[in-house]
Image 1 (tube, rainbow over the protein chains, first blue to last red):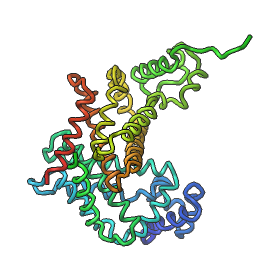
Image 2 (image 1 turned 180 degrees about the vertical axis):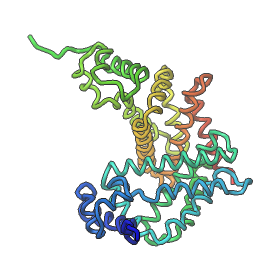
Image 3 (image 1 turned 180 degrees about the horizontal axis):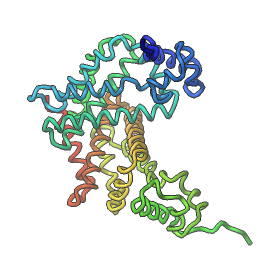
Image 4 (image 1 turned 30 degrees about the vertical axis):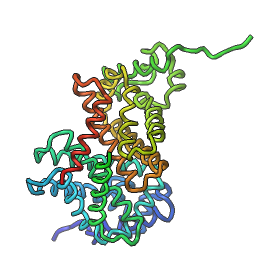
Length: 191
Length: 191
C-alpha cells in the first residue's frame, strides 16, 4: 500500500482561469492567492506548487513560448536570411495561441491596468528578443545583424499580437505576423 | 534679511560621480545612500533632494534624453519618412552624450552586474520606444508603421550605444547611429 499526494486534475489550468477571472473582477492588487485557490476548488499550497507568486499565473507559458521560438529559429533552413528565420519562427506560434484568443484578451486587460505587470511583460519581451538574437548568432549571423533582426522581429510580433487581441475580425495570427513583418520591411525600405 | 537653504554647487553631478564610483568599487547592493552622500561631501538629505532612490542616480538624464528625442521627431521636416525622422532624432543625441563616454562605460558595467538595474534599463528603453511611436502618430504616421519605426529605431539605438561603449576606437556616436540604421535597413531588405 502506498500513500500518494492527491493529484488534482487540470489544477494548473483551473488556477489560471480562476486567477484571471478574479483579476478581471476585482483587480490584480485586490485578489489574494487564497481567493484564487478557493475559486479553483484547490488549496493555497497547491497554488504554490505551480506558481511562485500571484503575477506568475499570468506569465505561465512564456518560457514554453520562448523555447519554441528559439528552437524554430535554430531549425530554419541554413539558407534562410536572419529576419526570414525569425518571421517563420514567430508565425509558427499561431499554433501555441490557438484557442487562446479569449484568454489573451482578458489577460491583456489585466496587465494594462497594472504598471508592475506591464513592466514584467516588457521585460519578458526584451528577454525573448535577446534569446532570439542568441539563436541567430548560433546560426552564424554576425552582430549587429543578429540583434537587429531579433529586435525588429519581436517588434513585429508585438504589433501583430496587439492587432490579434484588439481586432476581433483578425483570426489568423500567423497571417498577422507575416503582415507585420512585411509592414516592418516597408517601413525600413522608405528613405 | 533672508534665510536661504544652503546651495551646494554642482551637488547633482557630485552625487552622480560619487555613486558611480562606489557602485563600481563595492557593488550597487553594498553601497548605501549615506556613503554616497559622504563621498560627495554632502548630506543624505541633499541626496534625496535630487534622487528618489539609489538606482535613480543611474537613470538621471533619461527623461531629458527622451524629451529631446521626442522633440526632434516632432521637428523633423514634414517630408521625412518615419524611420528617417527617428534616425535623425537619435543621431542628434550624440550631443547629449558628448564627453560622457567614460561615464557611460562605467555605468553600463554597474547595470550589467545587477538584474534589477538591467530590468529598469529595459523598461526605460521600452518607454522611450512608446514615446517615439506617439511622436510619430502625432506627425500623422499610421499604426503599425509608427510603432514599427519607433521600435526598430530604438533597437538600432541600442546596438549603436553598445558599440560606442565597447569599441574604444568608435568615437562618433552619430555615425554609429546612422550605421546601425543602415544595418537595420539591410537586415529588413534581405528576404
